[in-house]
Image 1 (cartoon, rainbow, N blue to C red):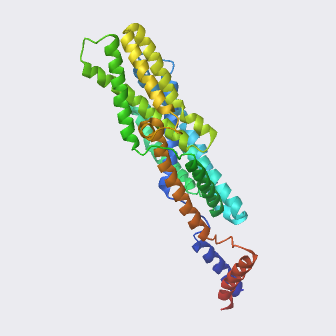
Image 2 (cartoon, rainbow, N blue to C red; image 1 turned 90 degrees about the horizontal axis):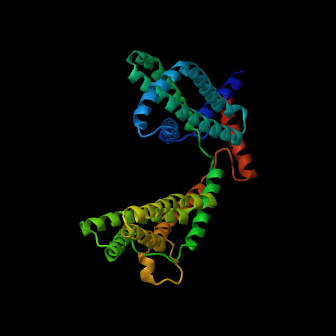
Image 3 (cartoon, one colour; image 1 turned 90 degrees about the vertical axis):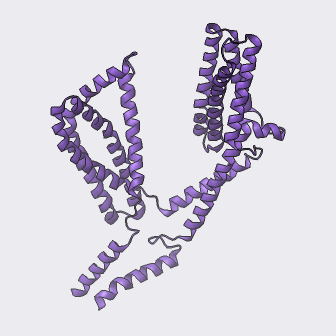
Length: 380
């Protein structure tokens, strides 16, 4: 009887002292993800509130927010009544899952419930923001904050705790690091012809060259009556925005590892190019041919610098084009990614999960060692 009790005590103490039983990550990582979800929700609420309005959208939004907050305040009680028990249930499942499920299932359950908890907490932030607007607009309702704030604090505490359990086991981390390492190596092989100049310097030079071309075009067609230096500054600023956007888009394109990311990398540069094309057309008819043609020349120069072929290109052109500079910057980032994943693969390969010995012999040895460690207190 005493031996059995001691055996159970030994098993409990061994399990509770094992850091690998319930792995977690720093709370700040979960907090960052909740903030990201909250920001997306706040932006969506702002867009939905301002979308159907006209020039006075700011004043109308400030008027609608308190009304929406008052409506949310009527329902926040039952919302908390659902959120808190659900999060507590998630927490119980995460803790209890260690006892009734195998390690792989328990780990997967922790990750899923952690993601759901973070999404739930982030999705409720816009509602809390609207309630704050309502309390500011109607001070008597601010008394509700003495109830809402503590309950919201408990909710975020549980969500952050659950988000801390979003940890992948060693095998998944190792596979992910190996895939990233191999992808980085393939990308690096495709980035061989590239610029040797810093990308910021190339962007500045392209901005100045674009501004100079635009100014010379305007002077050739119709000399301006105002300051030529101010005109050059305006065109250089326009060229700088184009060069920066194109460099960023090309960098994202060169470092992308999937087709969707490659397509999304060009969304902002192409949108900016189309806006510039519409602007140059409008200025051609409103401000005269000189302004419209100058803008079109800048657009053409920026597009040529971005889309210039890297292969069989003289070193001077390759060094000073957006294509070459963005590719060179992408290569540096890919090298850093490759080195980090090589180091991560080496570190993970040297580790061994406590519950996952390398082969059957190691498994048997670990089981016998555990049995002896449990039985020894009872024998004593």
